[in-house]
Length: 397
Image 1 (tube, helix red, strand yellow):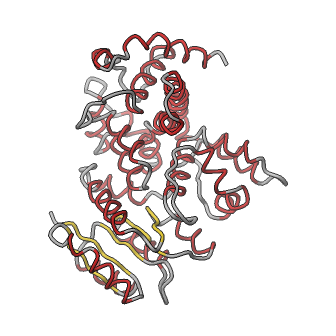
Image 2 (cartoon, one colour):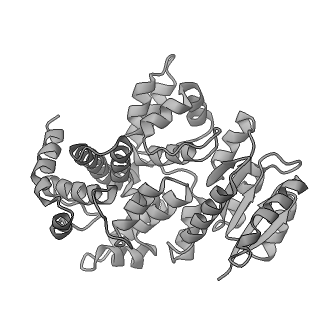
Image 3 (tube, helix red, strand yellow):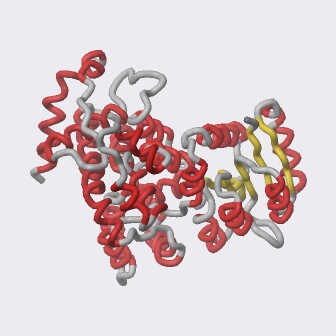
């Protein structure tokens, strides 16, 4: 299957430059270059594209308007912006329909890597319907209690930035959207961050208020669906805290510690995505899961894909750091290269099972054994008692 990419920009010289710079990819990619939104939509109506990457400022139909149309009519297409600085209102409009935002001038090798990664994602989900539903998603809804608590704090006369960051870092949906924002160039140069607290600090309380209260950065899960998600949210947050504690035990770098927390918090986000995309149908579909089948098989039969792969697809689509996406994907599919040492995937596997052992398995997943053979090969097996002790201390806080 050919990889088809559509570039849209009203500057002919820029399009010529892109075409020249990407000439080496002609054997792998079928590329077209057009000068505006209407022409892009007309071409897309004749044949599908895997990726559309557009400038933001264009006469008539700007990039945000174009991608909104692409989202509605060509939902499986990955939607990217490649643009110079734009006004704040335009950026706010582009956040919802855009998967990733790159700034001009963009290093051509970085652009190639972004496009290659987007094309690899095409094969993560086999179900066209499920891929369409996930691709159209603009936000991952949050638990009502946390969402309302955040809005109340932001609507206060003087919102407390530390309190805001603390709320966001407890919610998978808020964290995923915020990391999408900060790891793309919506606000200028992209930052490779996995820490929601740092992301809130970089954005600043005023801009964050605008994005949440006016720009619809986050959304709220219905009370009905929250009954399914609440136990899962508790498990994800506990796994995040355990994974962080384990990383600290291993004297991991600050980046590694942050990645371990993020992986724990986000590793079950696929269930929230399924609940939000299927809405009222989710409860009925969930009830049809055959408990006698392996988890991944029963999810594929009912939803068309595993919740881990759904989460992997969305987080990759949104441009989150590779360390996070690969660790979550590795929880479902064994990594091509086994871990050579302590890593976020290992921290997640141990933290996840510690939570099951201490608080009981949840209905969403199966309880597997910790891979003690792997830990022994890595020289980490004797660390398990210390990790467990640190996780138990967290429960007592």
